[in-house]
Amino acid sequence: MNQVLESARIALGSIWSAKLRSFMTVLGNIVAVTSIVVVVALIRGLNESVTAAILSQAGADSFSVQQYPVARGDADFEKIRNNPYVSLRDASAIRRYAVTATAVMADVSGTARVGYREKSIDSTKVRGVTADYVHFSSFDAERGRLMSTTEVDSARPVAVIGWQTADRLFGTDVDPLEKSIQVNGRHFRVVGVSAKKGSLLGQSQDEFVIIPIDQFLSMFGSRRSLSLTVKPRDMSRIRQAMDEAIVALRSSRRLRPAQAENFGVFTSDTFLDIYNQATSGIFAVLVGVVALSLVVGGIVIMNIMLMAVSERTREIGLRKALGAKSRDILTQILTESVVLSVFGGIMGTIFGSLIALAIASITPVPAAVELWSVTLGIGITAVVGLFFGLYPAMRASRLDPIEALRRE
Image (cartoon, one colour):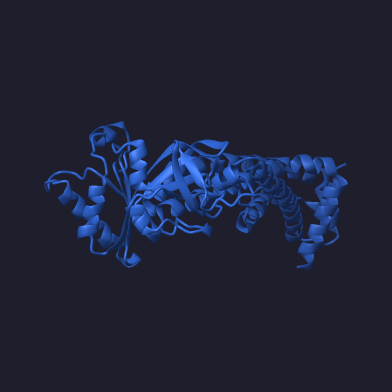
């Protein structure tokens, strides 16, 4: 251990004595590790953000029924483009025949102009829901309450609004509860304000209005496909609930056994799989391209260490003449290579973390710098230094002390 520490001390002294050359030597590692930390941080941040958004919208404890299943290309979409709309009749069929389902919510969304007195917001998301929406955790009311099942079933003109919608329409001085807002000119009484959810890739998740579905269809027209969200009584029976829903829809739509299903059934895992399939290849290529620069940095370190061995031939010969073993010379040169490479890794990690955090703070792209990625970046540079320093170290350890001392 003492020998390794002494070699590390000598290595640091060599780095400090030739600061510019050392910096230029590890510049490749600094750039590579900086890029790796930034790319991994952005990928992790994006994955966590998208996963949270999918789970909040689709729900981890439910599955959804939509007009179209997953289409892998234009040919697949041509086969399903004429699928019938998902309707309230389909929701009733699932409620009737899916005995393991505890709640079936139908919802539909669009955009509208929302206003309060002289203030208004264009293109606000408006979502119409059925009474079972209260059973899903994605709906909440931080202030006030949710719409009651009676209000939804009887299509009362009531609404739950998002945090940002309330902030933009009412500010901080006016209590939005029991106030009347206009949605495309129609008045709705605000009964609740949802908790703040933040944004996803710069898109606010807090600017919306939730109203009874019959009110929505009355304003926007009934010729729209709905989305059904089904919650099983027990998560362990979600597969059974999905099978029952499929049977109920096939029966309701009078599909023969040989006919394919003209609807899609999805869980949150389905959406996550689609996202992962779409992005995993891109992310792998990004990391691979960035990692190539580590190889280039390692080659630079090997060349510099070969040059250092050549410059220090007399020093190495003198040390061997005084009793240093080949193993001691090998350890010293390897330690210098590893310390040089790790120094670049540490600098790259610091720069990468700062850049990732700066990107996250000034752009809508999220970033998550984690300890394992920092450890990985420094560990990789240590391996690179060890691998590319091995040849110069072996060459130095094999020098004949007499021949080395003869060199000028």
